[in-house]
Length: 151
Image (cartoon, rainbow, N blue to C red):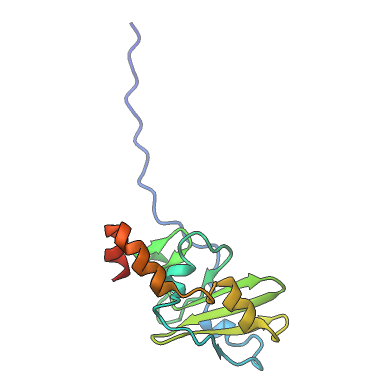
C-alpha cells in the first residue's frame, strides 16, 4: 500500500502590487491647456466610482493622490480598481481622458486627442440620454436586492 504524502501548504497570497502607479500630480502636467469640463450629470445618474469599477468598462485606471499611496490596496478594491477612487484615466476612441467624480457631478479633461465633441462622445459612452432613475425604480419593483442597493 502506498502512503499518501502530506498535503503541501501554499503560502497565503498577498495583494498583487500594481506594476506602476498613476499619480494625480503627474496627470495634472499633461495637456495643461485643457480645462476640466462638467458633464452636467447628477450623482443619481452617473457615479464613475461604480461605473468604471464594475468590469463592464475596460482600460480605465485609477489615478491616485499623493495623500493616499495605499489606495490600491484598499479593502474596497475590485479587479478593476477601487470603489472609492475619484479620478481615472483611460482611452476612448482616439482620445485619452481623465474623468473625475465630485460630490455633485462628473468632470472630464482631454489629455490627448481632439477636444471638440468629447462631451457628446462621453454622454453617448455613458448612455446619459437614458435617465437612470426611472429604470432603477422599475427594476427595484422586481428585485428586492437591487432596491436596497438603489436606495
